[in-house]
Image (cartoon, rainbow, N blue to C red; front, side, top):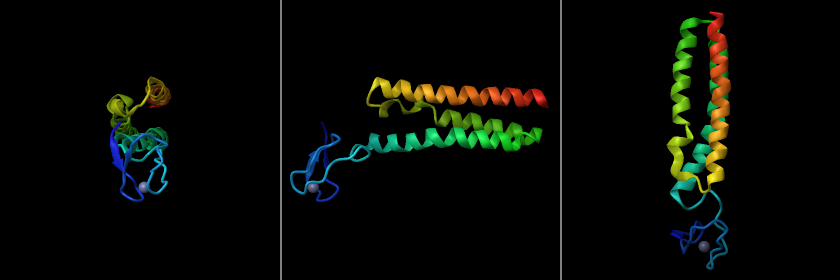
Amino acid sequence: MPLIKCNECEHLILSRIGTICPNCGHTVSYFEGDKNRKKYGKFFAISLIIPFFSFFMILLTSTSFIAFNIAVIIYAILAYISSPFKFKEIFFTTFEKFFFLGIWSLANALLVTMIYNLYNKF
Ligand SMILES: [Zn+2]
């Protein structure tokens, strides 16, 4: 278990969640300490915002064929960026890995279906 500096008093403590600093009583929280955990917070936000953003972007551009094609390209890039495969090292458990993979697959399956239906309308 790696050591980190306490956020409050810089005393060296264990990076495990829930560790209480013996010097000042500060408790280590989920997104504290380990670099991977900060990355985890970022990934969590990305995986929530990107599907919503893609959905509205595709919906709003669906009246123009050129704008729609650009939106589809942007969507493909965003889907790749938010892929859990790129964040493998941040997951603590197998459950987390499959949970995020499931959400990502579901959101993208819906978006791809939507794109396919809209293409058929042009
Ligand atoms: Zn402390």
